[in-house]
Length: 218
Image (cartoon, rainbow, N blue to C red):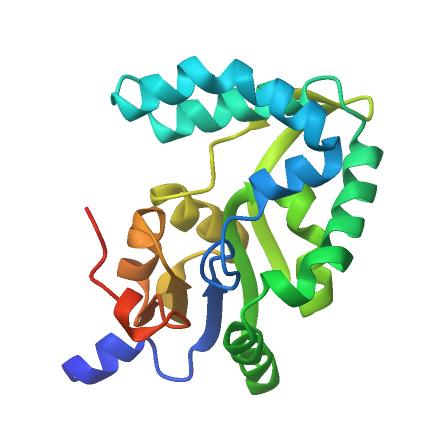
């Protein structure tokens, strides 16, 4: 087998097309705006004040991005009914779709689906929030899972935040050995580095303007 064939994946391999969501298919982050939409402006800013110290500690590199994310989830999602979040997510998707989503990204997803590839979102945002978007796109979803007990969110994660190496691990848990696929991937931040590195066909900031298509930052 020649090097080109190795780089392309196994002969007759199935194509697995993986899209990051926030910043890749969207113009900006979706989760924090979702929280403001769901809880209302007053409640949102009231709860955000509790994150001032953790936010400062993050900027000073005293806590990690994952630790800050965990505190954000805990601040907003503790004791909240799952059904309510699902309802808010549906409403948020309907309200923001046209302004939030990148048209070129939507076309690329549609092209991958039409080609017969297996297509999925793989995002650090909560799957509970992104499910309406995945449904509308007609593709599968892998996202950060929120712990639910008796229909109520505990404010904790189930497993790890779905970014960096955890994106690859989650894909492997669902699809098996990624070496059996021709992996196509789209991402836009450091959190997508491992996903893009695992792909034979990697696209960094593919739907951004040319001036924003810089190198993947460390």
